Amino acid sequence: AQKVTQAQTEISVVEKEDVTLDCVYETRDTTYYLFWYKQPPSGELVFLIRRNSFDEQNEISGRYSWNFQKSTSSFNFTITASQVVDSAVYFCALSEVEGTGANNLFFGTGTRLTVIP
Amino acid sequence: DAGVTQSPTHLIKTRGQQVTLRCSPKSGHDTVSWYQQALGQGPQFIFQYYEEEERQRGNFPDRFSGHQFPNYSSELNVNALLLGDSALYLCASSLIRSGEQFFGPGTRLTVL
Image: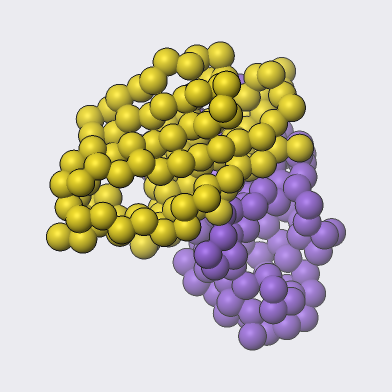
């Protein structure tokens, strides 16, 4: 069975600080996708990144970076020089990859990030 | 290019009633998935539709049913509403061969 754990329920940082959001997952599948989504107060889930289980390269996109470590089943997300606009709930998610592609997402419970000006 | 749209935005129903939520996928997408997000929780998968058929289903009772139309839009129906059905219902669209799902703004359902 698939499971995604986000142990940090809430995090508060002062603007310009770096912050790391943790994500640990469980799956029996050898091929899977990992995701991060941002959910601002408006409620819409905003896609941030998708990572294939075969690709363990870290990725950087502007102030965002992701550290995927298969050995520890972790997919952590770091925001550098945080800004007030980063305040939101962040979800880590996992999906299987069947032959026909898109499959349902298993979400963690989310981490609420508050960036204080 | 319009993204995923959902209607209505908000809905208030009473216990025992039935509700229908609607979703139009992103242009070019052929697959629609529905999720339920209770307050303070992560979204939970309800079901997924492709080629007008239910392709996958999560752990939800038969009171939850759906439909996909030839234009790929979709409906979620919930019968015999319970107080616990109060949640944000999210629709996501994708291409069947892609793992990337795009979410709509959601419909917030309140059951009194």
